[in-house]
Image 1 (cartoon, rainbow, N blue to C red):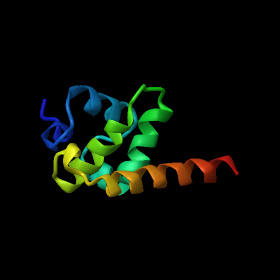
Image 2: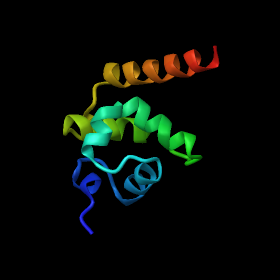
Image 3: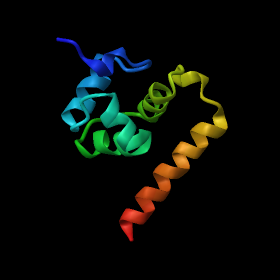
Length: 90
């Protein structure tokens, strides 16, 4: 079986399985949602994903290794994640 998600940088078998279980099946789905919402979808399904998955998804979308994302970019992603969580609580 050809899994388009596995062809993206940073995404391995487990992260691809989590994404599929969350309704994200290809690069188009991933781009449509963006890293923050894709990460939130995985977490909402109860998977114990760390923030590294958030960075890995963002890196996959940008076609760079996740550990090459600048600290400021990671901080921006974390800020977006926090603001979405805060918005959903209100």
